Amino acid sequence: MQHHEIEPLIKVMANNIESQLLIGQKETPVMIGIHTGGVWIANRLKTMLAIDEPLGELNIAFYRDDFTKIGIHPEVKPSCLPFEVEGRHIILVDDVLQSGRTIRAALNEIFDYGRPASVMLVVLVERGGRELPIQADVAGMKMDLPANQHIKLSGPEQLNLKTIVVEK
Image 1 (tube, helix red, strand yellow):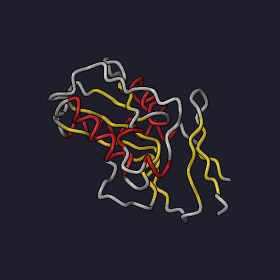
Image 2 (image 1 turned 30 degrees about the vertical axis):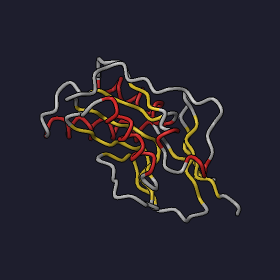
Image 3 (image 1 turned 120 degrees about the vertical axis):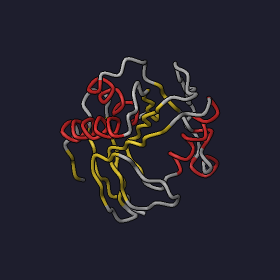
Image 4 (image 1 turned 90 degrees about the horizontal axis):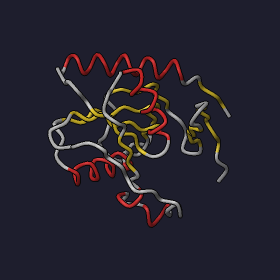
């Protein structure tokens, strides 16, 4: 098991987001975190970027195309987007981008609320194993891990990122 420093990564991510917003002249963005790790990271980024709008939270469990295979947690909470999505610049935050299926599900749910002007994908870790053509606009770190290793973010107060070897 390997541990990684999170706070310095989040600061770099905030700077990269700010730069991309300036380049694209995207003002007054809203931020959405994907339950649970994405919400934890989004809370920190929202504070650093001084985004005034409340944080949106997505729980994409019912939108995943593989939820019958992976099962569903019994305490699934509904999503909460406390702002208008239509025409907005959205910063979508998740902890780990691997297959791309979570992000595809998140985009499907966001579009059920309306059509955003743009979506910037921000992830703490971008790792190998992509199954869909989805990539992050901002990533805290990139890792190539063997199939038997997973990344796990724990929190929310003290964020810890661990690389875990899974025995088959």
